[in-house]
Each structure stands twice: as C-alpha cells, then as structure tokens.
Image (cartoon, rainbow, N blue to C red; front, side, top):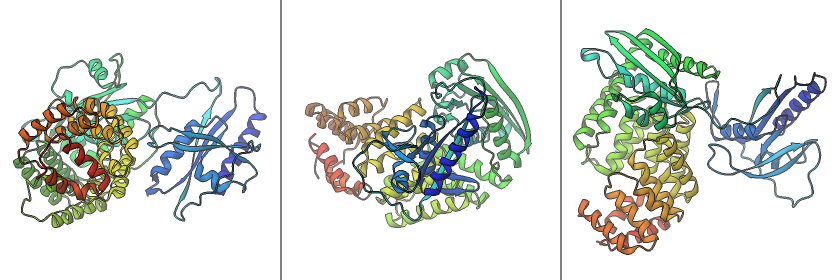
Length: 539
C-alpha cells in the first residue's frame, strides 16, 4: 500500500517537472485516486467495490493531485516524504456510503487530533486508478455532469414462420447487458425501453419520457441459420440519425455480433471502450439463450401455470447447453419465488427446495461468473435463509458486472434494511427508479418500506400510493407507514382492504412466514407492531 502511494507521488512529481519545462498551454495533467479493497479478477478486468471507490477518488482529485481513502492514509502516514491532508467525508457518485478522503501534499497539515491507524486485512489489494487529462489548447474547466443515458429499444422482428419472435429480444437484451458493463454509459432498464414495443411513438418523445440522450433502434431478420441485424443510433434531443449499420452473420456468431454493435455505438458516441474479448458461444449457447428468454417471458406472467411452463423451458435451456448459465440461473430464481408461492413445487420441503436452488445458482456461476443474473439468483437464495451480508455482496457483484441493472439495485433493498442500513437502501431504490423511469410497481413497495425503515413515513406513504394497483403486500407497506404517522383510522381502512385480498392473514402467520428471511428480531417486531396497530388479527 505504501509503495502504491509512493508510486503515485513519483508520477505526479515527474509530470510536474515535465510541465515546468514545457511551453505554456501544452502541459500534461493527471489525477490519481488510491484506495484499498478486495477485488475479483475477471480476465484482465478487476471488479469490486474497491475499484469503484478508487475511480471516484480519481474523479474528485484536482489536476496534478492525489486523493486517497482513509484506510490508505492511515496506513501510509509517517512512512512517506509527503503528508496527508484531511478533506472530510465525501459523497462519491454511485457509491452508497460517504467516504473519508485525504489529499497528498508536500507540506505538513495543520496540527490536529491524532487518530489510531486502521490496519487493513491481509487479503486487501491496492488499487490506484490514474486518468490522464491532456490540456493542449484549453485550461481545465469543469467535470461532465454524468455519463450519457442510452435507451435500447426492442428490435422489430421481420422473420417469418417459426423464426419470428424469439431472437430479437435476445439481441437487444445482449446489447443492453454488454453496453451496461462499461461505466462510460448509463443504460436504461430493459422494461422501460421495451415498453414502447409496437407503439408508433416519435423517437424524441421516447427519449423525453425516458430522459435519454441517445436511443438505439433497429430490426432483426432470421432465415434458417442466417441472421441480419440493422441498428440505428439516434440523438434523443433532436431525432437526428448519428449512425446506422447492418450486420450479417450466422446464428453461431450471435454473441460476436452483439459485441460489434456495442463497440460501434460507443465509438459514435465518442467513447473508446477498454478492450476485452467478445462473448463467445456457438449454436448450443444460442439455443440455451432462446429457451431461457422464452422461459423468462412465461415467468413474468405471474400465474401458477406460467411458472410451471417456465420451469420446463429453463430445463430445456440446460439441456441445450449444460455449459451455459442461463437455464441454471432461471431455475434458481424460479425456486426462490416458489419458496413463497409454492406454485411449482408445493410438496417439496423448504430445506430441500433451498438446497436445489443453491445448486442451480452455483452451477450458473460456475458456467459463467460474468453473467450478472446468476449473482442476483445466488443473492436471492442467501436472502431466503437470512444471510444478508452475503446477499448484499452478491447483488453488489451483479452491479459490478452490470452497473445499469436497476433489478440488482432494487433487490438489495431487503437485506440492507434487515442489516440496519436503511439510508443505503433508500439511495439505491431512488437510483433504481431513476434508471428505470417506466417503473415496475414493486419498486414503489420496496421504496415505501425503505422510507418507513428510516422514519420517513410520509414519503413512504407517498411512495406506495404511486403503485397503480395495490396487492396484499402493498397494503402491508401502506399500513405500517400510516400507523407510523399516527393515522390509525386510515390504517384500519387499509387493513380491511388487505383482508379482502387475503382473508386468512394473521400477524402470527405472517411473522412465521418471514421470520427466517428477516432474521432480525428488532426489525421484525417493529414491522409486526405496525400491522398490529391497525387492528389486524393476531391468530
């Protein structure tokens, strides 16, 4: 760690010497951020919260400056020829907690109360991210407001016969997922951008509704094993066409086509993406993707019959390519929901169902640790048994792989609440809704409970009222916010609505159902007391 900050200092010192001998206006300026944290190596990429914090520290550094996190400063103090000046606690973009930061300077800081150094764990890895800023003709002005927001619309499908319908969403979804893996962009969630399917809406109106800077639209046509994809990149502010291209390939080359489209889009927007190998996989993997996406469509219908159909389709995905992650992830997710609903495996004991779900999720991770949905599925199963820290880590890993996944943000809500990290939960839910402007109704339930958990019950009540159709679990969120606000009469009215939808509801039965998942007696009792105050039956 000490060597990392010394290296950063030597870089900046060398650059400063170079600049002093250069012509005015032709200086080179770097910003450097140094952090310490665990990382996951994925090929040549490093993933993890430590990487994110280092990148954000670099972003707030002055040109020619060095910013370090508190852990780095505490360990390196007194071991270098320079000094660390405290800058206080900073809110960093896309980092859910404040980070205490320090600036490296040649002069000593003013005397202050000494603090005990924090020794880092032996497995910690030093991360130093440097970004070069070249000012040849113009001085440093201001940082950009944020990455461009991009909406990928569902592709029109011009295939015929049995070829029609199944592949176009797979191509668009692949573009969304791969483009979102780069932090240079903010890619809007699938359900928001796909909501305009088959609607003759003007592109600029779509961009306005989604608050998107760019819109990607196109078409796909499959004939036997041949595939033609046409894609256009459109300026969302004025509707002008920036770029269009056509891609001809075989089905075996589907994943390579997705990668080429992503790189072309990025180049036109003006970003040079870090080189990484394109996703690989031939026809078996494409077939596995086909059955998986078909299963997802069934799964989202939310009926017992549709979930049973989804299970069969996920099994077909596994049979098509046992080395692909899709079917395993689908089965793990389906089992997690079946723990609550019992629509597919009503006679399988809970412990056995959890064992099966974990096995599927682990197989998905073994097949492809870069498939972010696999991490969400594994996090769900951690949550089901009350392993909240592990669930949060899995959801965070999904966000590392797909920083634009509003789903990963939203599912993080429950374990964060049960861990007492309500402010983080609120921030993530607000971010999820921002990135998914045509918001799924269940997001408002999550946000409502997050506001309730931190005592912002008026906002919690407003949030649940944003859901167009209220279900039983929505009335539970409404009731606890109403009782929190002391509006008991309104809470009793909501309780009556709850009992209309769920006549068998009791406080004790509900508590028994969620006790293992919540795994926090204090939180659970506060929740149940909020429901009791509305007069709901105890037994």
